[in-house]
Length: 354
Ligand SMILES: NC(=O)c1ccc[n+]([C@@H]2O[C@H](COP(=O)([O-])OP(=O)(O)OC[C@H]3O[C@@H](n4cnc5c(N)ncnc54)[C@H](O)[C@@H]3O)[C@@H](O)[C@H]2O)c1
Image 1 (cartoon, protein in one colour):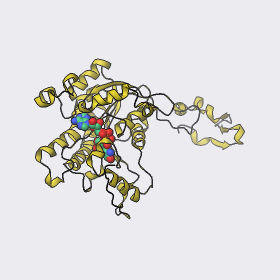
Image 2 (spheres, protein in one colour):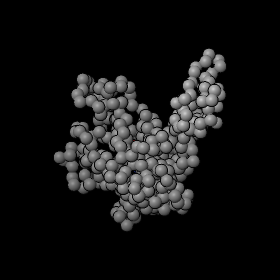
Image 3 (cartoon, rainbow, N blue to C red):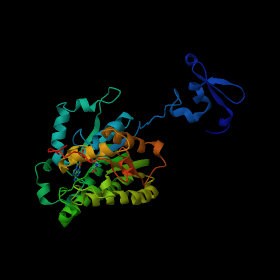
């Protein structure tokens, strides 16, 4: 509160009459009119207890959306609910099915936002984040039928399309919600050099490549986010193939990129460390059901993690409310990361695919 604020006193009157505020100099105004006296309240003129996440006028790119079952989708929904226009980038092998599901209305229920309106993507771009430029793409991938009609699906191609469609600078929010480790089911000791490097390339370096390419096209005070997992800090049996190494790199890079991109473009860079959630990617690892039950039995807060928990945190971190937060790993895991010991082990089950 600025000048003279401590001199006024708010008093609750009878509920029917609402709250009035005594201003210095003995004027008494209804609380809801306080805005005209104190511009600080402009963001919420009706009710000073309401602190909204307002992303209207902002454009977001969420990279790593190809169905409605993962964190990218939830982030897109939360950003759109807060008023942002949302573009997504999809991995070519999964993009065709995603487009068909959208066209046929199969995702309409999931597209419904809390106010009843529908999540509409401004653009859906192809992106294989393993590649910065087309000359790095092996022949075998270029000629794959899921890639051939997609044009330039590399980070450079995505950047060029954004510039063509919206000019520059045009972006306020970038969410990196993608990962891939071809040998994720292998313990680290049995991971090949190629598998390890591919996990780190696709799941961690892709953030560096994306930020380097998109940085010049970001508007002032932009926010960049990624998704990480606690296996970066402690061993999680079953999360193999170099994926734990990729997440450790991603978190370390978040701090270094926060410094470099902060000074270069004024951009904030954070990562959300999410608890386990049965997305398509996580279910493919093969033990997601077991680890979700383990978390539910041992987290400080006894509740299931919802993808929207991550979506809402992403919206907050992308908003001016988080203007002072950068270089951070923000845990959205019902508090599991805070535990030094656990109480319960889940009962063994046969079906462990989610
Ligand atoms: N689900 C979990 O339990 C969990 C927990 C913590 C962190 N995360 C992280 O959340 C992020 C999103 O994953 P999710 O679990 O929501 O699954 P998801 O399947 O919804 O998202 C992963 C996306 O990555 C895309 N992708 C794969 N390879 C790609 C490439 N080369 N280029 C571009 N896109 C590619 C997939 O098509 C998919 O859309 C990932 O970084 C993941 O590691 C997930």
